[in-house]
Image 1 (cartoon, rainbow, N blue to C red):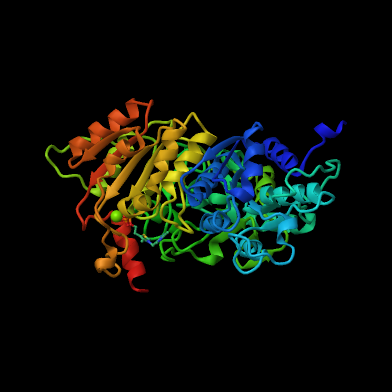
Image 2 (cartoon, protein in one colour):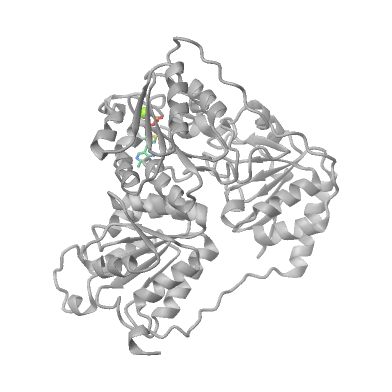
Length: 546
Ligand SMILES: Cc1ncc(C[n+]2csc(CCOP(=O)(O)OP(=O)(O)O)c2C)c(N)n1
Ligand SMILES: [Mg+2]
């Protein structure tokens, strides 16, 4: 190999990202990262410049959820530290995002120079990211760099959590040896423990009269969807999902009973899950929002729970067995078949009949969306009533519902739509976002315009932080009114619709869906005290804690 073609640190990192299915990098440059940006621009990776680093972080989070891995690239300090919040969300919700940050060169930092963007010392950013990523490295040594790249990227893929890579600017172009390989430890379950666990689960499930599967977010993150479908089909056991696991498989799948979230969920789903005599939890995280602020009435003696962290059956814990191993074994075990599955409760959706001259309400927004959404539309919901109202929306395909129902950072959805459409150009993103959240990151519509993306953004304007009002209200929950449709003028793209009535909404949604050449922004004017039924139930539970 001649010197000119010998791989560099940045070249090897780019090559590894490409090999692992990453096609785009989101970010904003700065002087410490310019060399990295230049190398990316001259590679097969497409660079997506966002307006703000947090927007890049949220876009990458959504991209990782669809593609299995994503990358974001920023400059040191001012850029990197703006990614802490989006990375925290990726950690909490298991989204494997690779953070790549430029850094001052090794030659520059000697002697403790007071370089721009420095905080306490040059290790500050690395220490901050140690809290919100599962592995970290500084690629400052050509001898170890390749092994470090493999170690850190493998950790992201294995744990489905974010990782942090820092590159001092005078190291990016150093040539390295790429013959090293990092060992990948595939976890192997102890056969005797697995056999005992399987025996207990098998007996419980076969004896149960009304068993139910609760399918969670980890089924998606660890790519177990086909296995889940196989188990459902072969056993004839019905299934529910959680808010975080919504759309883990298509909601038209026979046997689907709906999204379960304790008292947040509708009565039918609640009865099916809480009235079950054996709940098989496959990868559902029992977070406060997933369980309707812990209003879920689930008796531990009826639960089999397999997650990425371990397996428990009733009150027995089986060490060293995870979701993937257990699900594989359960599929192979041949559970008894209970006969054909009933139709999904989402098998058909009600037609939306416009009540003329009726002002639009939040629950009618969701009735209308349910009737109008087509199979190629992916829904992304921001926290707030956008998320709670969406629980019962019918999602037609797998993974076509994305939310942040655990960490719940406002402002996720608009930038997430950019990552989603880059990851899967065949999907049309439909963003549901509150007026408060829109003011945080709505500016990223400019990024959508720049790259010719076509999200439909529905701004649910209830004149403030509606979710908080029933808990404790005051002027702090008001937001300054925005003429949000005017953003089309600001960014020179898209079509805006102002919605006051049911008829306005149907017209706007149909026109936006019919025109897939440009982005759309639909401004829905709601009353200040209009909450979805789910939000009313949730805030009654939360308000007691304020
Ligand atoms: C980044 C961030 N800041 C603050 C909060 C706390 N918070 C939760 S819901 C909410 C109100 C959201 O208002 P809006 O986006 O208009 O949605 P609505 O509740 O009115 O449906 C706030 C401020 C949060 N979740 N995330
Ligand atoms: Mg609001």
